[in-house]
Length: 198
Image (tube, rainbow, N blue to C red):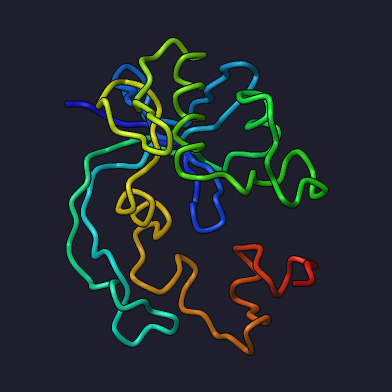
């Protein structure tokens, strides 16, 4: 049975996480570090399982396409952290981040889905794996190889929920205003705590 490894980009703000086939690595079933080109990307195992994907009908900020449904997933590895600006630059030679002043250890941003797929292919090649994507202009298609890839929406949500059923893995949010949510302060950088003036 194939196991996957994931490097993740959250494409809403284009933060990167990757996934790749790591059958031989699964036997260790613990965190490992991909050291291609000095990128040092920490990967953690996510066990097989099922969960209810989507948001509760009464959840604040729910989108109309977030219907709850049961999803079953095989085991995979996923990046422990978002891909940093330093890691992205080590692999691609560029840093497209809007907030580059934030520093090399901040997540890379301003990356398109195809650029994220290209990153996966580059790190796959540097790690001696077969690239997962065929890229033609602004289109990337799966080759279903052993290379790193982006997590599916279900894999990303399953990992982020961490076996919880609340809005976030640390519970439901108590928003005071659009830019003030103490619950979110504990787990994320967002408009309210980022010191960025829009």
